[in-house]
Amino acid sequence: MSFQEKSAWVMCFALLISGSFYAWSVLALANVLQDVPPPNVGGLAIGVIIIVAIAIFGHAVAAIGNPMDANAPEDERDRLVVWRAGNLSGALLGVICMLGLFAFAIEGSGNLLFHIIVAGMVVSQIAEYALTIWYYQRGV
View (cartoon, one colour):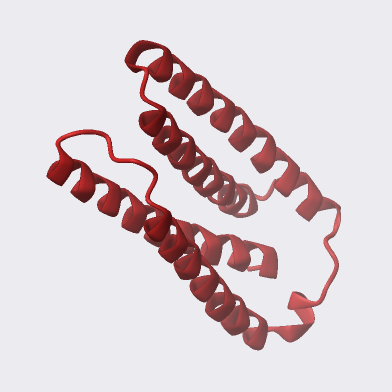
């Protein structure tokens, strides 16, 4: 397994944990308020800290396991995998943003739009890393 694939596993895990935490905090607040809560800056900050901590630890472990691979430049296959995964995840982000705009047009809630866009960014990044892993496993 290449370092880039290990990195994708680490970041996918970090985003799943962080995104789940943020979604849980927003849903818990929505349950208390009985409405769509405003942007949760504290929850976002904790989510970013979770991502950074997992990324640092996970990449350090992956690099210690094979330092030569960690310092190797990307080859043509790596660039193709990242491009294909990024292209599809970018399209997914665009679709989610459009859905958020439609929800805003119908509901008129800026808070809902904010949470849909944040969810879209997290989901599209998870999709990018999952596609990266899939392309590496598939041998693209």
